[in-house]
Length: 224
Length: 224
DNA sequence: TCCATTACCTACTCGCGAGTAAGACTACTC
DNA sequence: GAGTAGTCTTACTCGCGAGTAGGTAATGGA
Image (tube, rainbow over all chains, first blue to last red; front, side):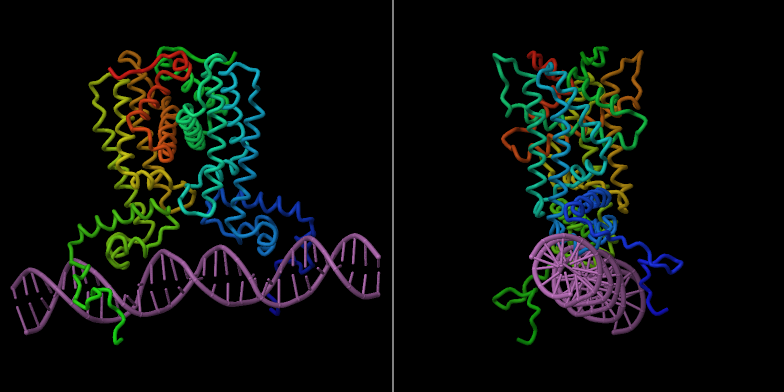
């Protein structure tokens, strides 16, 4: 065998279609980011191999470096894009004219639906143990803070009245708890897919709005 | 300089105390596990270097392999030990003769206190993004399930009456949410250490027991 | 038809870190 | 004091994967 590198020819020996169709940079960057999100979600930052990302993206490794920089920069780009997508989804679902509890409910529901439809996206945002001292630590905690403030804002509006507004600051521990509760329920969901996004977000809404004490006595929260 | 290996002599040239005091296996294993928990907590599984663990443990690398096996086995040993410690702490804090809400409160409180006193232990258990396909995935999900069932049991006792017991199964999504809420609050705590374990666990108890709807109307849960 | 630009590739280097080979030292037993 | 079991070390190997050198080939404008 004179040349073992048959990657680009099919078994019949015909020249196969070259995978590179010479696409413009913008398109390639999207493909690379898509692939990176998939692979980072599958393995986590460190197990993810640049070679695999390039393979999934259908492009060679140096292109990634040329377009999006080193591994950590690529990861930051993923976080940035996916965080924006998720936060946009939730923001759009929350109509400021609605009742506060209804707003909270819509937000929760949008969150569960987004994650259901974008597992990889969510996994990248969530499953990255925020180990200290990584180059992307700043980006991760920034996105977390944005999410926290979004929820804290929802809660503040839900908890305060016009004459007695609630400090955003005070809502933060509750917002943290709520976000974490959502995250955990989502993890649990993966092993129990028989539940729907609707059912689970309703359960969470009941837990945080009515409280367990009310729930055991049969009182339930219902959307208006 | 005839021999550059001065590790074991102090600058004065006197023979320093050898760091190896020829300790029995059991003691060494504890030291190694302690060091491993510290280092794994600091960097996460993959960034943690066996060399650093051996250094922190004050023993050479081959000893780790001899006593506790390869890196993943060592990690599993850490998870196992720390999970048992945490679960024991909570279990002991919960007195089955108390009111159900009081039991829940004690459990939460014990959880927050344990984590406050054992940050590294908690970090190892929690911050390990449970990436699929790792050799220790099984161990991580087992510990998670144990924690979940512990909490679900608490909730089931809190929510059911003797004549109408609640299915443990049904409590699981709530238990997941509660555990996650606690975890998240703890993460948030790290950046806001001005709160006490008491104050935060009380807030969480209020959130899950009274619900946000009650809380905004000034109703509070209090320990009996 | 030449040139510049942009897209794209193969085939490397090189360091880091998991895991090991091979043996040294100590302590105890008989 | 010789054998044996257990403790402990130095100094390696070796593969994997991030990142790069040094190109080729298509496109589009003059």
